[in-house]
Length: 250
Ligand SMILES: [Zn+2]
Image (cartoon, rainbow, N blue to C red):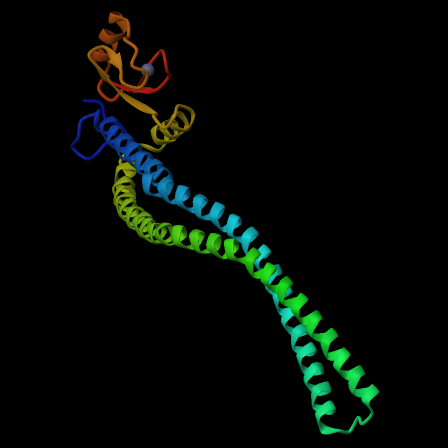
């Protein structure tokens, strides 16, 4: 039996190739786990919920800005009204105290109070209009908040789901990585280097089994004479699929 460098002690010449196939299986599993981690259905659902929440927040901020403007206007009107009330009370106070004596003064003060009252009534009208305009905005804000609440709760649950799914995949990935190291150690360095090159070039698959006359890497059937030659080749001889170029193990 031919001795192949790197073959396990007492093993036959095919040991490095068997080891390489086991390594390929571990690498394929690692690639699948990494793919699943990048394409978690929980993450896709979370992304959807977050984008809907984002839309709601944008809609809410437009309404809230409009409502805030009305609140400012409301404050201005209230403060103007308070000034009028204070002024009117001061004049009233003065007219009752008798400090302004003449009939003409009394008349002037009564006229001013009347003007202030008219202005106050006008402001009350305007304020009423502001409150009326604010009402549908408040309803809309409450509606958005009510709609947002369950979606927000859904987001929290999905975030937990994503964390749990990621953690579980990471455990599997760590286990696969731990299994890979001793497998790689059992493959001679030049063969391992060739495998890595092929793997990076050929979609993650560098070595394939020959199953029922077909390469499992490219799934194409090999000519019968080639299959025959592969089966009769010396144990441990590194052969390649003539169609895809992958290392082929009969
Ligand atoms: Zn092939």
